[in-house]
Image 1 (cartoon, helix red, strand yellow):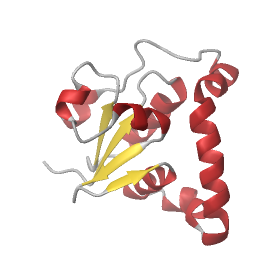
Image 2 (cartoon, one colour; image 1 turned 120 degrees about the vertical axis):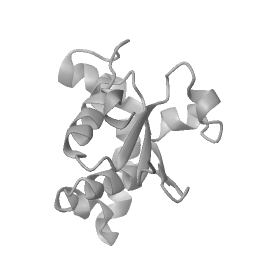
Image 3 (cartoon, helix red, strand yellow; image 1 turned 90 degrees about the vertical axis):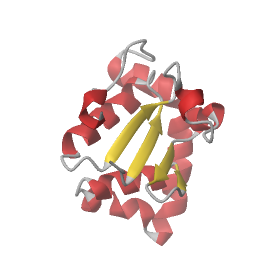
Amino acid sequence: MTVALTIFYDGGCPLCVAEMRHLQKLDTAGNIAFENIYEADFCERFPQIDQQQADRILHGQTGEGDMLFGLDVTYRAWVLVGKRKWVAILRWPLIKGLADIGYLFFARNRYTISRLLTGQSRCDSCNIDRRHHE
């Protein structure tokens, strides 16, 4: 089965995993595949994805093979689960640049932000239920 989007996420970040879990619950059509960049065989299965770059900024790949980064991945995922109205503002021309700067700040500081919001900066076993797409 070809998916519309594969998201390459940080499986050690509690906030990142929480968003992926939420997206997965909403993805009843199975349009999105979720790939933890820290799985043992990740580099073998996805040699085209630079793991270090994917750790710095969210990566996504469309079903057609096009790469998306940062909020473009987030936007595409939320559109695919029918929640475009929640994120449409992030891609409006006057807001896009500021939103992207905000995202980059979050990406660089996600472990600290996670610790402040959840009490946990990293986790060893944060993972989503992969059975949804296998």
